[in-house]
Image 1: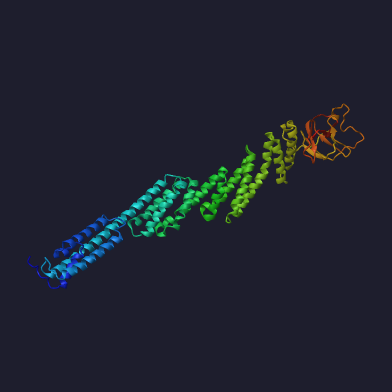
Image 2: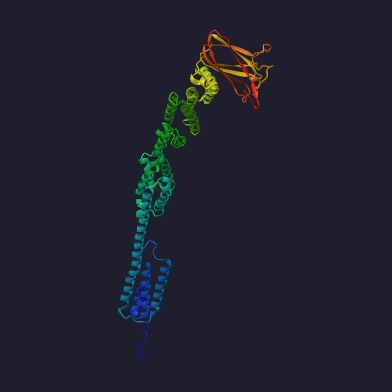
Length: 505
């Protein structure tokens, strides 16, 4: 075969043009040198890169792929430079034209990179907007459930809003976060708009923590949006609980007074508690005075508990608590009367005795003591409880009560008049056996040689019920007698003890 054309003399300008053409990523330098295999390699590398990189997404192309491709282009440029140093170009004939063409074609990789960067940025924007939409959907879904169930969903959505606002502050999604937060706040606090104040307290307290994680420039006026609503919810929920006689109102009012002490809602707390005390005190004169008394004493304890947690209203609350306690003590009289009239004599006795202890100067003190005596008598003789004892005293019929027992005794009586007294023990007396009480000769208090402790009282005519019991021995069964008194007679009541196996009465 004829010998090939001799190598061209070295030409750095031509070599540079080939190197620049290869940097385009299309292998054009090899094309002008008719180097087909390197040309195919360049085209293949570019196709692979495009396959990996397109379509552009938020994650972008792998950094390793970009580095490998860049290294490949540099190698192709270096190899093309050496190849073009002694090889003539097929076209264009003039070397400066090839050099200019190589410079111009550098626009291909540079422009491609810029286009890809723009496409990737747009993909990132779309991905961020998709995250924003998913967070919005999460808020909407959470709004269909109660707050306890939805709380985690609200937290997750807030974390997305914060990430967009802080870590992607220049994005279109971040620009929409302030508007989304307005919807977020109204959704979380939906219970407040429905006037479900007790249910609104926890969500509003949650919203007050949002500024701890969200930048202030994203919140604006929302930073203090929950405050007045929370104060209103605490007051309204507490007022409802107070009216219903619950205990939760202490917490609600306590939180209100400590969190918003200068608010208009806090100023209404003491008047609300004062009104509740007055209502409970008025109920003492109603159909269920005992419940009213219990409510007043409970209210006293609750108000003291509330006053201990606040300094601003403490003095005023303490005054209301004291009035509730006094009203409760005073109301024990009406309660005892109701219990007596209902036949609950044991409870009536206990209530009246407590009333006498709590109210030593009350105008009803004397009658309360009489009612306590009558209630105790009625526990042994129920007929004695048909009429409520009065404060009447004295009468024209003498009745002498003697003690023929070895125990100091308390004598209780009720009827037209009510009273009690104590007789000392009979030192020479003993308990009678049950057998002796069956003998016809048995005559308690009939031994003229004994000096029985005794007391004579004057009673009006009518039925009087007597009960006597050892003063210091609750194991002995009380003795009793029903006496129908008339003028013209002298009456004697005898207290004695009869003992059987294992018991005394």
